[in-house]
Length: 158
Image (cartoon, rainbow, N blue to C red; front, side, top):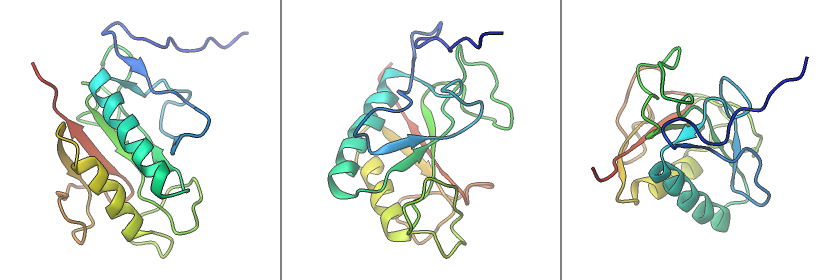
């Protein structure tokens, strides 16, 4: 039985985040895999790409991009959000540069690099808010279950 690849564009006209671009400053993770949970509004894709280029210029470690939205925008299991294509989950950075999960409580957590990455997102005019539970990082709001990732929400002109 052949496994079919998910479509690049969904019914809303949103695009799947490129999964393994060469020379990029990010890697992907999340459920479901293979990009099935990474359909983004073009404004969010632009924000991710702007931050990714700035990040790659200052840090060799890639950051992890997780859940965005499912194709067509149905409810994303385990989330009250992630239906609009305007939200993205991003892993905090690790000191060892590994492409693996880390919490803000771990000795492998790199607060300084994570704060820099969050600062790049917050510098974008489209970024409305960032949820993350490390209160030592300026500009973030706490939210339950946000110790192992931060959540970025953008706004787009109507």
